[in-house]
Image (cartoon, rainbow over all chains, first blue to last red; front, side):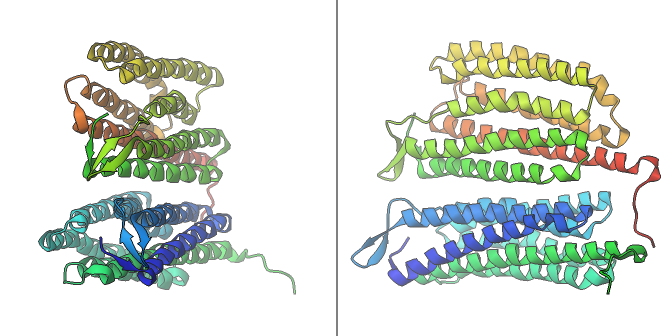
Length: 258
Length: 258
């Protein structure tokens, strides 16, 4: 832990508060929308809100831990004895990253057996990916960071492959009105997840000191907001779009009289 | 209470936070799903969420008590005057363990008289099991731990017998689509409950000091998550599966036209 300027400390503190506010608001948005979608998409919205709920809880805790980890002395923030608890992020990801893949699979409403098998295999790969990253994150050695970072990339690449190969076919059989959004949600997953290894390896390529702390903490916060709240909005739109399609089946759509 | 390294203290602290987040998220998942099941299964989901709600509350309190019980001195965590309150676990189990059995019975939707008699006898046995364990848990004497631990096993074995013998017949008469899941839920109950005596007796077979504290606290947390949140997901799936069956009765399922 290194000394931070007031500006650096405040930027991170405010990023955490922004993260909490965005994720808590997103949670309420998803859950308040459950009544608007057809029954087969309700669980997808419940899970979407669970992800942002769990993340909001952790941003609240992260903000508290940040306050405890520094004290203002002579115009700069110096570390206290209470180290900043970066494990909150990994505990959060252990829960939320598998659930993010479950969201995507649920909103696709595949057959029961395909839902179970894809959710299980992708969820376990995501769990492995997060668990392998942690020993590198907390290590002081750059070598350890590289080794566990690269190990963690193996399940990550397998997930990317699955999302484009196996799930790709299922995406192409989605109803036309929602297909573009499902494809976008898949791409946002992969794109936003690519941001995490960039932040992770920023510490291993010589970026260090106060600047590294700012890049890592603000970077992870932005990635979390996009991957959870932003991705969740896409899941919500897909569920709404597909529910509208169902309402239109057989020309039975109720329209207001002219 | 013994001195803990920063790593040991943090592992337990983070396990408690993980427990809280998982159990709180599970509670919301179960309660938000109430609208998706038929009326005869709604109470089962209400109770499932009550169990994880009560447990989430206790994990919150346990985390606070843990923070108060140690203070950082020269890079190690030493016990303060405020002892860690392990009674929170037993207070939790007194409420939640009988309710876990009630969940399982409710989701089976047996006759009213069978529901009442089985819920009462299994619930009272569970209460007795938890109450008998407590004097051993708080005792410094290994003998006392063994005596109350073994006494507590008597109602435990009676519950296991009931779940396989008496309730076994009722399980085999569940609708085919849900029978496998009900059997699994019964087995998860027995399997995850077996973990508690292992942790309990870990203290009586010579495992002591800081390592014992880590094994006991992390072990109980994992067992609680599996026995309450994991088991609850099975109850949710059973309720959903049986509700779908009801919706399909008489071929009245609404499907979108081709």
